[in-house]
Image 1 (tube, rainbow, N blue to C red):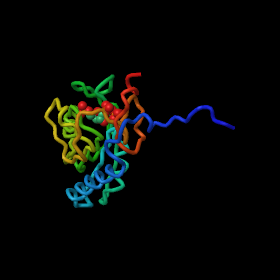
Image 2 (image 1 turned 30 degrees about the vertical axis):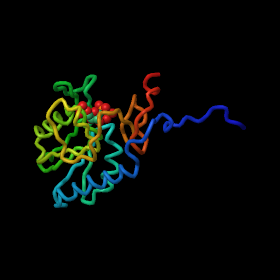
Image 3 (image 1 turned 60 degrees about the vertical axis):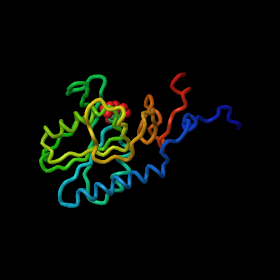
Image 4 (image 1 turned 90 degrees about the vertical axis):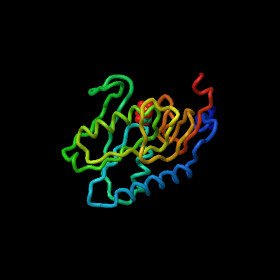
Length: 191
Ligand code: PRP
């Protein structure tokens, strides 16, 4: 039977690939090796804290690549809408609840740092909760977009101010599942 409808392929919405799957895996290895280097004592708890949703793919690859033992947890924050805890324009939508904060070295896992507001707020928030140490690993960094003073400890790669999707990053909740990072065709968001 002939299929009348051409199957929709999200790859067709991408103008070009900015960072290929292979390049991303090299960045993951670089960040994982730096984390392994900086946290050599396997008996000290290291918590990889994934910031939902965009960081979930980076988190998955990173936790498989890091060789030392890690624990994982998840938070969700939002600059928009309403949350339970609010400060400035960052809302905590999903928090971590642990009784061992003072025994935790935390590495926050982020897909991208833009204005820096989310990470500036979250690192202070976790310090106030009593974490032993806090660092930030971001796959992508857009330093030209900074509105507050913030620098990540581990960065995959710096990029220009272009709107990127894939590998966790979305446009209108789509494209997160792409295994590479790409630039959307303009007609996708001008429709
Ligand atoms: C993105 C990204 C960071 C934040 C960075 O999340 O994942 O958490 O924005 O922006 P900032 O440096 O300007 O604070 P987003 O709010 O798009 O949520 P998502 O990860 O669920 O897509």
